[in-house]
Amino acid sequence: MASQRRQLMQSHQSWTDDLPLCQMCGVGTAPNCTYGPDGKDTQSHPNEDGHFRFRGEEGCSLYGVFNGFDGSRVSSFVSQCLTAELLLGQLNSTHTDADVRRILSQAFDVVEKSYFETIGDALAEKANIQSQLPEGVSFHQLSPQSQKLSERLKELEQEVSGGATAVVALIHNNKLYIANVGTNRALLCKSTSDGQNQVIQIGRPHTTENEDELQRLAGLGLDVSGLRQAGLIAGQSSTRRIGDYRVKYNYTDIDLLSAAKNKPIIAEPEIQASQSLEGVTGFLLLMSEGLIKALESAHGPEQANQEMVAMVAAELAQQGTLEAVAQSVVERVKRLHHDVYASGRQRASNCSRHEDMTLLIRTLNYTLADGALTPTQGGRIYPVSVPYSNCPSSTSKTSVTLSLVMPSQGGTLTNGTNTASTLEEGTPTHTPGQSPTTTLQSSINTQTTQSSSSSSGDGGSLFRQRGSQAVQPDETGRVPPYVDFTQFYRLWGSDLGTQGSSAGLGPQ
Image 1 (cartoon, rainbow, N blue to C red):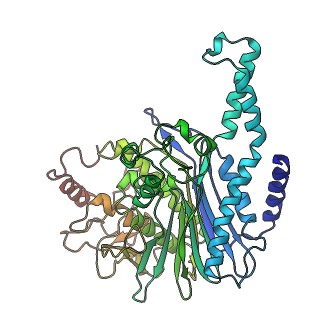
Image 2 (image 1 turned 45 degrees about the vertical axis):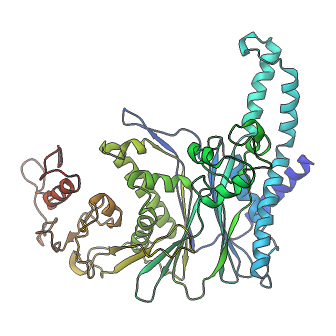
Image 3 (image 1 turned 180 degrees about the horizontal axis):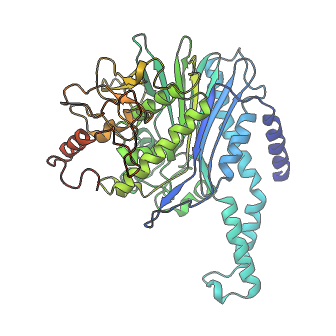
């Protein structure tokens, strides 16, 4: 049976290879990274993330981002087979919302069962070897033949271990469905009638901080307080995941889960109600946990969604392809994460490493720029007003406004009604009541040849206006600086509760 299913999986892979990729989608990735004390960055393990972005028949499109752990086997399998379970004739235009939700849920169930069947032979061999090895004997005390069996056992344990979390977006009959298993994230950004962008986080992560998940686990007889205190379950923060055979079938051997009446860690997706995309202009973001955690580690979780939307909107205004947009945003998050670590300041200890990062962007009736704007091209204003909530049903009114500006005629940057300075990459503007660290992400990656308008209320401009003629180098081969960071260091010092530019601020 396992060999038959393996052949079927391979045939599924060949079928899905023939499906057209969606041209309204771009993906950016970055591998995991650990920062060493010598300044060198090292990759701890091969990239374990996965994704797909297919356009099916009858106006049906499918997108997914998968975060693998303990290997990429599960994320690769799911990215291949889930498509075959959804885009090979299973959906048609006559299906209702209830039908689509049922088909989505069944697809996840079938894919996980199929995965476990593919490792059936390895599990049988593993059980056979375990029965032959003596218990309580160290490796060096075993006979040469038993040592070989022990080494083979380790290989098999690695082969059957691992799992993945998933966030999948299905567009069917011009409606959006989000199916989530674990800790990845989906954001829907829609332009409103007044020209602002409204972002909605669709669904919540399945962790021990999710009260609904804790209620589900409590219903199985588990100690909620112990789960909340532990945070991690078998090394992972997710309470729902695909694969992970050890946790699914040997949960009685895990202290936190041993009292459960049934399998506590499940692969059942939480499917959000369909949202009509009729007349919607904006974009959809699917993000792996590694990308989310990297941004949250650098700047805190409070404004992570807003910052991500601001970066995507800024890159959409500058880049010529969606692939470039997605990759630029991922690289920007990676750079910010590293800069916080290198700064040695408060959040540096949270940023010693990051996991694999994946960002998938799907535009919705969004016209991409023909190419990167130059300082002589027309200016554009991209205000982003973001009512934020963890759940779509929330009535929270908390919002933040991020003003995103492209260069205007002649190289002068304006910022709409806010008239705040737009700085070079990595240099935040300062808004009353908002720290420079928070505003760092709402700034736009401008070219170094651009200048800025003066900052209202700040007592001066952070940029000196450059003359029309190119500045000539002095006798040392250097040109005079045209960026004055004095005001920035004063604001930064104020944010940290220091005076002036003392306390080690400014160039050392």
